[in-house]
Structure formats: structure tokens, C-alpha cells
Amino acid sequence: MLFGIWPGVVAADLVDLTPLATPPEDVERTRAGLDRLQGDAAQFYIRCYRHYRGVGAPEPGVDATPADPGNYIGRGRLIDLTACYRATEPDPSGYAEFVRQAVRDVAAWGGGKVQVGEELNVPYPQDGGFPGCFEAVGAGVAAGIEERDRLDANVAIGVNCAGVADPAFWTRMADALGTDSTARLDFIGLDMFPDVFHPIPEDKVSAGAQFLVRTLRQVTRDVGISEATPIHVTETGWPTGATRDEEKQARILHAVAEAVAATGEVSVYELFSLRDGISDGNWQNGFGLLRDDYTPKPAYDTVRRLIEAS
Image 1 (cartoon, rainbow, N blue to C red):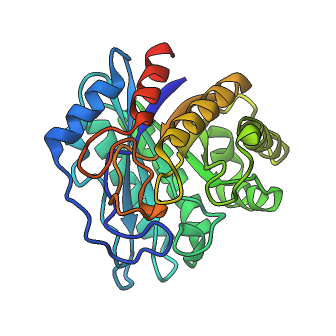
Image 2 (cartoon, helix red, strand yellow):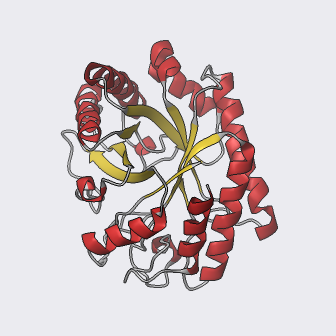
């Protein structure tokens, strides 16, 4: 599997987007953390987020992260730019132009992929809570493919979901994309967090991870997405905090990565995230492999060794 990670920091609670006073991004220390994590891997994804807000009021607490992905290119790194849809009024044409710009930017950074929309199967504050999200993503995928082809650029276009794949959701997604875009998807993404939002026994985590991947393949195949379309794990992680110890984080991340690799279905595997938003004991802000002061948790070296062995 090709690995990747999100290096940015959201200055907001990841559940309800309440603003937080988080330590700022330190580009040099972030780059150093990425360099050591990547090691000698020839390619490595850097996951980034932008938010399209259309003509509505700005969404509080969320900015583009990292602020400048160009800070982290080089060494064979590829940019995974997630074009989130957060318009408070339906705006498919405006969002389509937003995706076109995302494709142009990723091409200028040396290539990678653009994920069109983020977790449309999840209500607010994710994209599924915004009006016209399916129509916008349909327009965005078509525009992204067209712009990629026009530029003849190394930019893959895909969509994603979170958690257990729902046939009704993926039917609606395929309908919104239309036959041509559905057939031309370069990847389908899965945000998966075993034992985070729905706790399960530690000895069931591996099986749970494989269930999520295999269910996604089955459900998307049944709605007409080719089995040849790669699956990317676009987010996964396990947070630390007052009731979640760092040694368990290392164990869980190792177990999930090995379980996912064993399915033979996943070609790209991206972790959320490099650094804690804030290491204040609240697990919702503690997904990082590094603490907010850039000191490593045990999971950092666990993941580094997984990448080294891949």
C-alpha cells in the first residue's frame, strides 16, 4: 500500500467545530516529522482540505489545512486535496469551478488526487449536511475529470464515504454522478475509525476494519462502480486522551493497517493525523502521531516501521 497522512491542524473541535486555541503549524517541524515518517518510500500522500462556502456566510472554525500544501511537496510526495462542499445554498456550478481550480493546483504541485466532497453520508458539520451536496458533487466530479483531461495531468478524481457503506447512499451517489462519471472514477475513498466513535473490543478491531473495506467493495460494485476502481482509505486513526492511552493507539494503528493490507483491496492508506490539534486530554483533539509540541507518541515509530516495510 502507498501511505499518506494529514499534516495540518484544525483550530476547532473535530466533532462540533467549536473554535480552539491550538498551537500553530510549524512548517519546519512538520516537514521534519513527515521526512522521518516517509523514510525511503518513493511516494507518499499529503492530505489537505479546502472548503467551498459559496455565497453563504463563512463556516466558523475551519480554514484550509495545511495553509500551503506547497510547503510539503518534494521527495516523491503527492497531494491529496479534499474539496469540501460547505455552501449554505445549492451551488453546483460554483463548486464545479472550485474543483477545477483544485485540479489545477494539484497538477502544479506535481500531481496526486482530488477528492470531490467529504463524507456526504454524514450530516452537518460534514458535507452531507449542506443543501444540494449531491448535485454539487456530481457537477464537481464531471468538472474535475474534464479539467484533468484538458491538462493531461497526473490527478486522480474520486469520492468517499465514512463508516459502513450504505446501499441507499451509494445508489444516490451513483445517480448524482451519472453513468459516465461513475465509470471514470479513479478511486473510491473510505474514512474509517474502528473503535473510536463506536467502541469495540480490541481483539475485534482487525475484523472490523476488514468488514468496512469489504462492505464498501460489495456495495459500490452493486451500484455499478467497477471492482477495478481502487479503494483508498482516506482517513483512519485512533486518538489518545485522558481515557485513551498512547500504547493502545500504537497497537490499534498497527492492527488496522495490517488487516486492511490483508484484504488486498486497498491501494492507498492515509492516516489522520500527523499532530494533535491540542494535547489537552480531550480525545477528540488527540488523533496525532505527534503531540501538539511535536514530540512523538509510540504510534509514530509504529507507523514509520509499517511504511518502511510496505
